[in-house]
Length: 311
Ligand SMILES: [Fe+2]
Image 1 (cartoon, protein in one colour):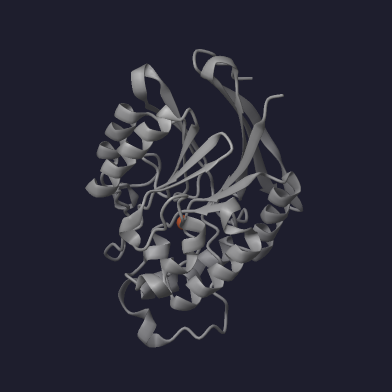
Image 2 (cartoon, rainbow, N blue to C red):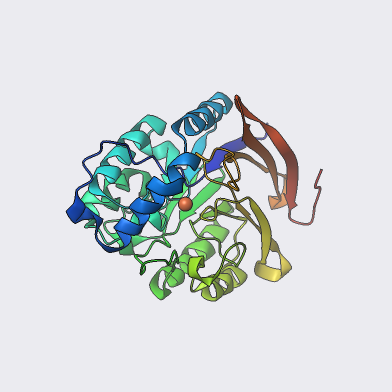
């Protein structure tokens, strides 16, 4: 019997900055202050705990084998936020069943690893080595027929910028990893916060070295790239190895209510099934928020290895 492996993807939960939190003025210099004001002015209306709770309940009801979260768990990188997000991750699932990569909001300012992103390390740990610092990405986790490759594009950037960068060292390591995994005949899923191409927004929110990243994918291949960042849905393609195309899929924020121009929350269930002769079939189930809960918005399938049966 064929084994189908199911995993969930959501992004940008932006756990709320709680009113009454001990947000100390000395912590709000520079970019954090801008982020804090933005939260107070409008973002708190969009990112609602009830929506996120409904999304998590819907994910749990589908009982995926694994959960992936592509960054922006928090807002302005306060130490208290990292603490609270760790507690949230503990409730989300055990570290071996949940994979996380950081986003630009998680790196609003540089925070020492042990009181910052290092708090989430169990969910960002590869099978063979633990990221000990921000420079230890990518991590690789093989679960069933799927390999999750977690990239960090999170770099502190000047005020008003939300850029991301993969970096030469990480890109070189990614290329090695993708080649190694290709020899293991696994379905390679790259997790990253910023989309690897220009999709929405301006250059001030873009991945600065997307060209280098795309060249790595073209030389080494991958089966799927998942991202967040723009809080908008996105389906695109990048060229892979030998004429293959790599689907690139992004989702809106996991906590977004339909307020103003915000696109409401969405998550996606992917089902990976190995077909004959090393071919894959990827079934995609899109679940979107509407008042009262989540419903199926789309369902389609992608074939790999010569078959292309979108239905
Ligand atoms: Fe975000």
